Amino acid sequence: MNSLERFKKYVVGKEFNFQTMIFKGKFTLVRVKERKLNYFVHTAYGEYDTEYDLTVNLNKCQWWALAGYWFEPVKGFRRGKKTANAGLRVIIDEEIRSMMKLIGDDNGIGKITIKWLHEH
Image 1: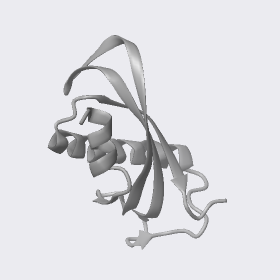
Image 2: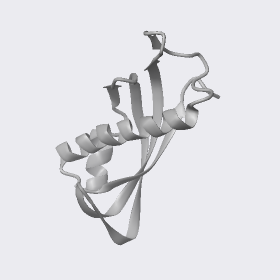
Image 3: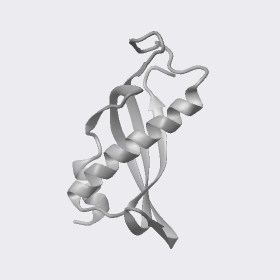
Image 4: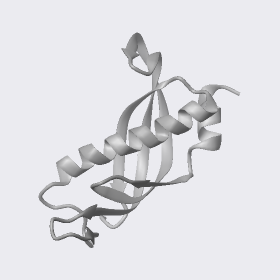
């Protein structure tokens, strides 16, 4: 069984819960696409020449409001959507990378596409 097959078997379709000081919620990894690079990338996690492009459904997302409570809007972020998506990509990268370590996959994570389920 190669890395992509293990990744699809154990990681795709699973729901992940996350909580940081700013965000908390749930996401499901729905699709993964393997992309072969023409070069090696050297990072703190090691070196790789294959990346996975991920598509994630964000099932639930709340963030800590300045008023002192967890806030979940009906229509998602408005003003800070780019900043929020960047922060969520870091969280998703860390969660998926930890699962990749468990299954022994040493490939990298490339583009992460986040789909908000309440936006059409």
